[in-house]
Amino acid sequence: MVNDFLARCKPQDVFVFLVLLLALIGTLTIFLAIQWRKIRLAEMEAVLKQDMLNRGMSAEEIRTVLETPLAAARPAPSEKRVVIGSHGD
Image (cartoon, rainbow, N blue to C red):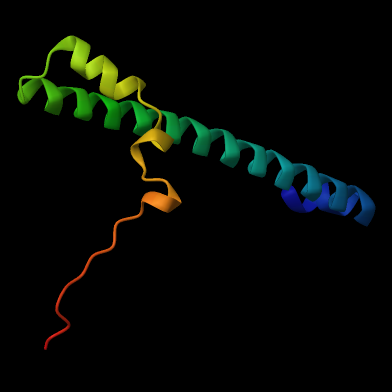
């Protein structure tokens, strides 16, 4: 069946078919990766919420933690901590 199809097609047609097939596979891969990422983020958020509930945090505290932007949680470059420790002396 595939051999019959290829025998009837011109090389240009096969090339166009392969390009379209690769574009479809690429689009499908990107779509699946985005959906997988959304699912993983939802799972991580659910685990975080459950952990905060287990620690006895109130709903207001949980909301505050979840609404805090990630950038605000990181120290600014001027606020980087310097760790001083022994180097095996």
